[in-house]
Length: 239
Length: 123
Image (cartoon, rainbow over all chains, first blue to last red; front, side, top):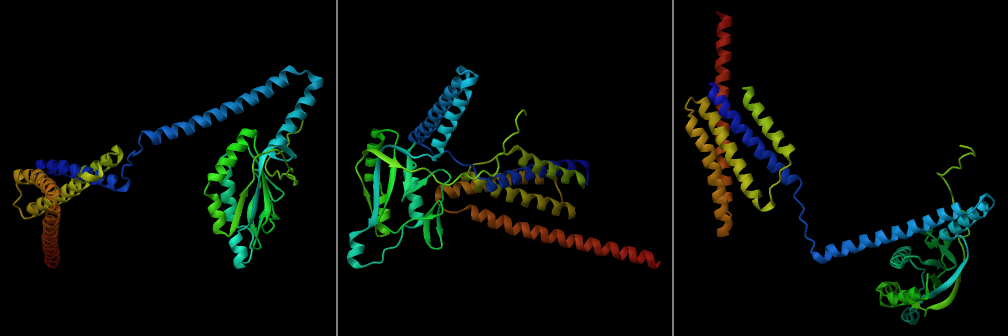
């Protein structure tokens, strides 16, 4: 082979290699096109803005706590701390609280009673779906059949019986209590639930979700168990 | 011998590293161009082994084949007939033929060489 042939083969092979690699690239990870239209983008923007405002609210609350600490002198520091702890307990759902809200009733549908269908408990899937649906609303407190539902609560099937926080949910009828921050929110929640398809999901399981009118004062119990703390450790004083 | 291989490696790494992607609709054109390029390449190697290699034929064939294949695919898309399949078929058959010829030539060369070395050893 002469030198010119070498050279030409090299150039041609370089081109071939490049083409093969580009083709390989295009086949391996096809370019994902952005197919969102202006409304989809606006929608995403609005969710981000909501996050933004939520974060700002949180920051404001924390700032307030800091300023309380600063304004208090040493003698009152203990009080401020205990207030914060109380606040945290309340947030975690360990205290009994009362406020405006609605009471929901889950009971067997009239048809299933008429046909003599055996009444079974609510399934964990349905209950989870229901709680997810409710969680669209921010700041609500929830009690399912007398069991306080907190962020640490679980909905599980234990030996065939649906349980919340490890405690069995009784066979329908049972009640679900929801407390909202304001009466207005209660009305919103009432309207939302009345229009929601979640009732159809209940009906598929031969259950009826009866949504009560918003009430001014509902009381729900605190989470009775102690929180398990597996990972956080108290630092010895002076460190 | 090593320079062309180096060229191939450089080309592949360049293509992979530059992360160039071509849109899905042009994928057909590139794939057929790759096929045409490979065909020309093996044709060139065969011609070289048969001692009929010509620079101009090789280089012009390389670019002309690619252009023709892409044009055929383009025409096919606009006529609604998968004409690029014709190119795939033609190039595919030629590719196999070329490789078969190369293989035979190499086998003949190899057997001749071993015969020569044997005769050298007996002498």
